[in-house]
Image (cartoon, rainbow over the protein chains, first blue to last red):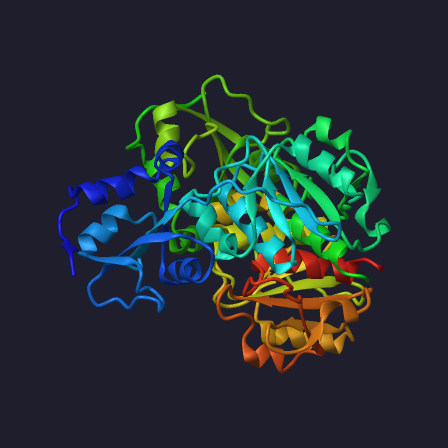
Length: 252
Length: 252
């Protein structure tokens, strides 16, 4: 088995370069870190090209078709983006843009400009848990292949389609399929509890500070908000998304 | 107005020391950063001792009784725990342990060993939004005066009592007051939607990995879970707390 001992090895330099979004998009590759995420990638529709692992660490099963390279713990430290590296990494191919077909009973989470990686990752995890059909990332949203986003998804990134898209087109496509589109707003709309659970729906949630852009709110069927009973100015966007997704999915 | 220009100034060294929990508890002081948080502290029951601000930055109103010290942007950078400092800080007194009286219609969020500062802060913010009466921090929970926790609360830390406590005593006190106590568990219990909205309640949520300790789950009136419809193994604890708190607070 090949072993890399130098942090100056070109392959290691490539792995480090992929911490930048531009480079990921240029090379069509991204890196994941940690046993659980590597396992999830191997078991779902992700093309894993290489696994890098420190000596003595176990590798998830099902890796026969993947190149495995041993690395020293110093090299692992060099490419790790966490304080305490688990010493296992995978180099994966970015998924190809696929034609995605909307279904009438599908549920869609449309994300408008969420900036915090932890929030985006948690929202993808929550969408997965709530059984959402697909997550759509509008313009201005943090890159989903950012290491912090991937970590916060806890593997859910590999469980459902997470698609970069034009919210305008998606809202229109939902309308064409008679799927109700709900916007979220602090200033206007209906308390979410006034909305019934839905067979199919699209929910638009927005940026941590600015919320959902007014131009999308004008195109929705209805805008909803989560009422604030105490003195908080707002809810964290991933918490609000969880409350709304579970409300829309479940018949209370 | 006094101006500090050296990062070696003893006051600046003290501020830095207070980034450690032990030191905060020894000195009975904590530090907050950012205009909004300083404003929130000044407007609520927090004893603010000093404000440190870089030249030219505005100070929230209502500060007449507080010492204000000018600092250079280099000093601000030295004491900041964020990537881009807003150049305003406040040194505050830790609240005294007060006798807190449980009320029959009160709602209480009991936290068992949550470790991630962002999660704890977000949960306090959510509890505030949901109109919870008090948040109780059981043993093993990250210190609430950690800078990351304070930042994630977005000021909610100053809006409701957040109390370090013994969960055993709190569960018993709730029972003595006939307040139903709900535990959360992935493995056992009832889907949360089977529970009615409650006038008063206690909800126990737990550590990111281990969940709520079995010894608490045995003492609850009922244990509930949020169902998972997709392939996620679990929800983020702050998202789950949001779904459950809003469900328990609101009559659907």
